[in-house]
Image (cartoon, rainbow, N blue to C red; front, side, top):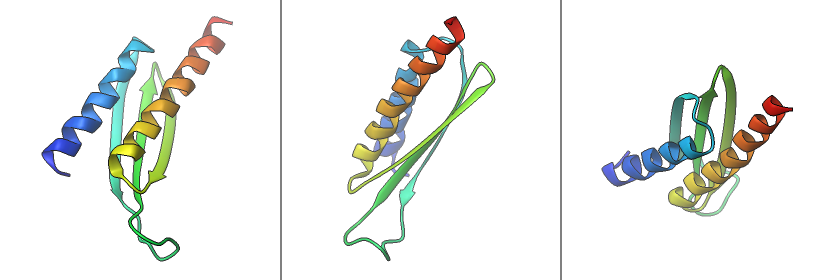
Length: 89
């Protein structure tokens, strides 16, 4: 992982704090899929988030690694918000 990708993924993971203040841990995996079924490069990002003992896992693919990271963060925002609503109800 290059320093710029590390910094970008860390920034996106830290931005999840504004949706839940009880995030215990975030693991980020990034990489390039083997392209035997696709033409061109296919990158993936997977984030595993521990929110107060509840684990949320999201993985997305894209032709650009930065886009894949953004997609995961956007989907995690929705998942965390939904989880918080369920906890309140």
